[in-house]
Length: 127
Image (cartoon, rainbow, N blue to C red; front, side, top):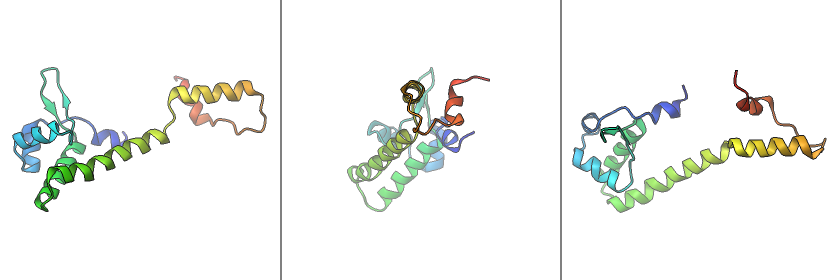
């Protein structure tokens, strides 16, 4: 299993996260309200936090202890997170983009173009 997937799996209720981070449940809900963490919700509306969320809360706590206010912390943390998401999106081709590339390659008749690799095509075939 991919490490990113493991880090983003929602596993911990707020009580456990509170113990791990030494933040109160009220503080954690406050940081969620301000968009610094985004826990998943169960059908019963219980918050479930991932390792990534716990890491983010620990970063927030550390910055607060250094004397930064919440606005400064949001300006430091959120742009970095958004950049990571954008970078990941640009690295991976969507299925639609790959289909368009394949269609152009198959029907353009351009023999000088580099063909798609078998690994990219394997996404369309189920074993």
